[in-house]
Image 1: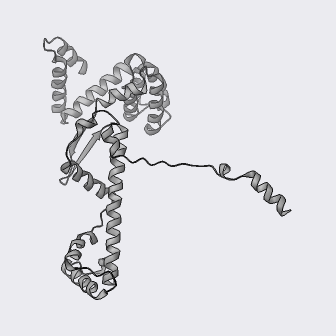
Image 2: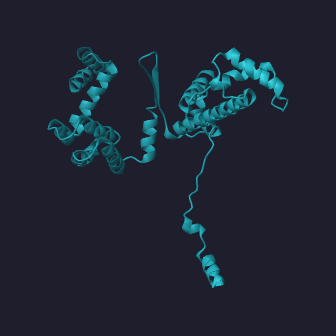
Image 3: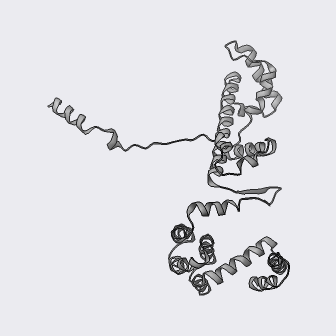
Length: 294
């Protein structure tokens, strides 16, 4: 069906005829199979790549020697190399897939694809950068999944920064709960759960403390939220990123170049140095100590 759509689009005088024809075919497939048009489009493209560029993998799948997931792993790795050399990956991968799990196979075929690729790592990275996108999928219970496809450097920088900020909030909440527990004389969780009751008890303890921990009622009211905040790191990361996305001034134009100066301004490098014990121990010193003891 993908080939039929491509041929029909190629006969059109419209420069976008092929794209329109393929979309129309995907819409027809989606209507018949009751799937989303994007899912139908992806299925057509996967089938086209599998049958045209990976015939041995397709044969193994048709014979039941490998699963559809194995075939998808091979095609996904093969998409990143030129069509002319995909046959070099096809034969080896089809044999390897018969004795390995899809997860193990993915590691092998990705490495193999990188070895036979005509383009360099930098060229492949630039090609993939052009595919960067953000997508949203609505799920159950009024929840959605937001996905970002972006360079690894920026992805880890975003994750590390959100984690660092989340740990600051979590540490602050822990210290605040300890402060309230010290003033109230018991953990806050043991109270009846009514905010007014908790605040009243802690205010009283604060006025009677007289040891530097005395706080006015306004500040204690402000800390009441922090005391009851038991969000996990994942929840904090999500809330912090949401705040940053919705409240920050957009500077995407400054991040057009990967690893640009604006990106580096917000990145703190963390270096771990591992030194083998044999590099620390001085054999000569141990020998001198042994001779001295003798």
